[in-house]
View 1 (cartoon, rainbow, N blue to C red):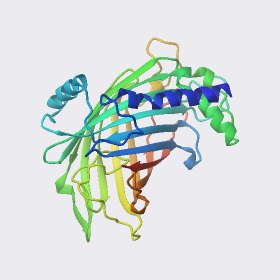
View 2: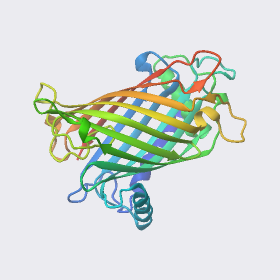
View 3: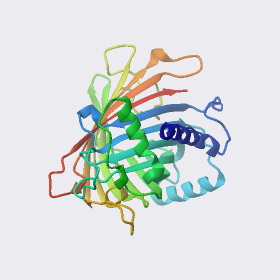
Length: 356
């Protein structure tokens, strides 16, 4: 009980961080400033939907997104300098996002109490993250700058969180958390550029359109370092030329019409692929110069994703906009090498949120 209380206390404290960190001093429960739009949502990742309990097995993230530009002088300087270098110097501010979350990874068999040198190590992360998005003047490209900081090891509370979840739902108790990647402050800074591909976009059927966008991403930190590239196909109505990564079409100029056949639901479908060249991954290789469990990583990892976002316009209230839900499935290639078979892995994701 003390462990579960600690989890709740830490999460309650971290949920207040984005509010306190806003330079404008506006709490999440306050009404947005005139002309500003907000969205709040929670995302839950889990592989148990596909009858597995291994590798990246669970993640939860609470997020708040606002179109109000509340950056302070320091943030404006470094995001401006980064944008000049990345080719988005003339882009306009789109929105910022504040998130807090926890994730955990485990080996294939969590009932083994001894170290498993040929399987993925236990590891957890408790983190806060801030992102700033900028859209080019022609609305053909979006640049995302993100900074994440968190703690790993026992400080991440991944062990008590997983044990509590398994106890509640009568699942096998994890036995190997004594052999997890140890405590450290983990940081990650990333930049992503997502651009519309007009030559592969156009009308499909009636006013349903296909929009294609390519992206690249660079991430550097002691948590992981990698370079990535990919493509996303979006199907729907009234789509912008390019939109941020899921959970939504956040920069649409007009309400998204429905590709579904029911008036009370609006649908947008996304299909994507990404390849990452991994230079370092703490969750696989452990902390440098520490006696952590580790496996030999694969340098190239690929994801295939399929997502369905559903907006519910009839749920609009007097003090909030419509609710939305998004389902996403990710099929990931093997991330490490071992003498035994390392299978591909499938993760399900559910996002629930509301716009203001």
